[in-house]
Structures are given as C-alpha cells and as structure tokens.
Length: 219
Image 1 (cartoon, one colour):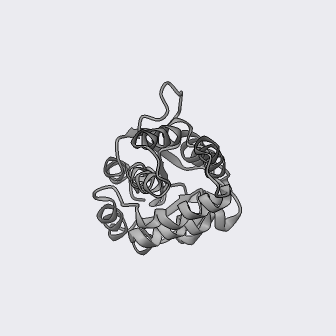
Image 2 (image 1 turned 60 degrees about the vertical axis):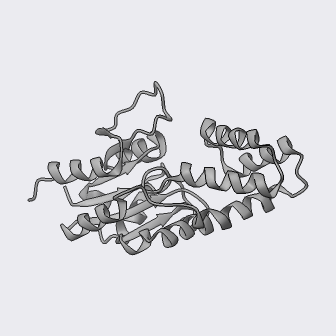
C-alpha cells in the first residue's frame, strides 16, 4: 500500500467548534442578542451540523433578523477563516509525515471561499501536497471522485490504496473505504451509537499519524 494520507479539514485538522464559538460571540454582539442566545447558536450547530444555508435560515427566523439568509451566510464565510486554528501538533505532524516520504492531502466539503480561506490562513495549504474542496470541484464526499482528485493532486492514485482520516463516519470513513482507502475515524463524540466499520478509532490526528507510521510496511 502506498504512503498516501488524506485528511478531512473541519473538526479533524482544525478546531471548528472553538472557531464557531468565537463567531457566535461576535454575532451576538453585532445583533445585540442576549447572552443565552450564544448557547442556542452553539446547540443548533452541534445538534445536526446542518448545511449553513439551512442553519442561517433558522437563525434568521429565530431572531427575526432583517438581513437575508445569503448575506448572513456570506458574512460567516468571510469571517471564519480568521477565527479557525489547527489542533495542537497538526502542522508539525503533517510536516513530519511528508518528511518521512508520505504524500499528504486534504479532502473537504464546503464552499470554496470559506474552505480555501481556512486552508490558507491556517498554513495548511503550505504543508500538504494537494487538496480537493467540494465547492471548487463540484462533487462532494462521500463521492469517490473527490478522493481521487485529492490523490492525483498529491501525485498518487486511489488504485494504490492509502489512508483517510476524518470525523464524519459517512462522508469521510464510509466514503473513503468505498474508494479503496483505509479509514481512521476521529471520534469527537458526535455519532453516539452509530455502527461503523472504521479501521481504527482515535481521539485526535496525532494518534492517526502514529497508526499510519506503525502499520506501514514498505515494499
């Protein structure tokens, strides 16, 4: 199996939950919401991880906001790249993988402006061999074509196998396995009781990197 390691972005490499809380606090201040409204926003985000257009439709109705949904959503996308941070050790861990001869890539669903902004602002774009963003490519995980695009950007192919690391059991793990990759699930506690066939379950990316290094057999 080739040394190819693909990673999801949100809640895998970057702390989207922490960034969302910072955004919700700013949003509440801008719209003069009550302190308890921040908790409502966080609960809505954590409860179902809805598509952002749906999310902001609910937000607009709940708070009776005058701004249209698209304007609220666009403001969110502009701001989030400045609020996200990588989890500790992510940048160095990816760099170590590449130094050890691995091809490293990122596969993420999301709008082009938002996801590309996160990749560039965090420095992730500079420490990987390639990435594929659904909003750019016109195809979303779990479709195997997005994994294939990312692999090709890394100078590899899905036919050679490899690994996918992510927090979403359907988009990341099931999708990657259907595409011929092994799946390492980063369990953030958002899929209670969901049956899965992940090859490994870890708490963070550092554990995933250790597994890939330990189980890789050259030749």
